[in-house]
Length: 394
Image (cartoon, rainbow, N blue to C red; front, top):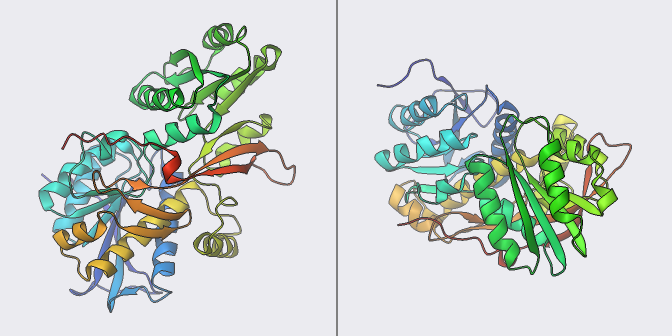
């Protein structure tokens, strides 16, 4: 039974609105517009709209078909997300759906795409299972997966003579992330000395921190604690307060949205890898996005703005290449397809439809004029620099 009261709006990409016509190109956006991931969702929508504008050179049409964006708020709840996506496919007749913000909601959506035999471009949910064991052939993902996050960080900080210990949340996100990180780190010649897992609601990291310090303090060479954490708790700052420098220990973690980067200002010189930071990629797409976003919102584009933009570019490229919105023609066009994004070229891997993409090794710089920590580029980690495993079983 379909759940009621799903928030939905249909707007033309051009100024003004009108009822969708049969020949319109309908794109459904399922996202957590309200709820715990609201900030991420709003960035995705902004990026999607700007990406469609850029991809169509401002016409908001593809092959003469006007683009209509139909948005549905799933509140990051799996049951609402399933219902929203089913409604988008069956009632709104969307040609392609994009979403969603929460990994749990995205996993619930995968079978809906398969049942309706319609394309779902997953953006920005990161769980490996989405293009892993829960994947089906109707799923393509522009967002990075957990393995890409973890592997890029291992490649950024790992080298012979480096000893690393990890701190992660004690559930699938943390354990899967460390597993991928550990696998990639071994190939860099670095050594993993210890793994610590803490409950997701942990606020006191004294015991975990001391065990990590004890595991590293007598090791020769460079010593790093790598943290993978989502949400509250702020383990980086708590570990920093314990003065790891007295043992010659550094801290490391991945990138984040700009408001979260404010906390990194207490960690000048920290290194890690990020999915996106507006000032790093140098290409015409990102140049346009940064300039236009600054002009329109008096702020640079953020992490998930780039993701929504990439999803838009993928959708327009696919429909243009397939010359159709027929699902089978789209799948044939999208497998192995390259498309431009603010991060440069992405490519949908044929085996699991995961977008192969660059990541960025950064070093934190503190600029008193900027409210967040500046991520200075060390090097671009290109597709060939990261061995991202194929995890689906099909």
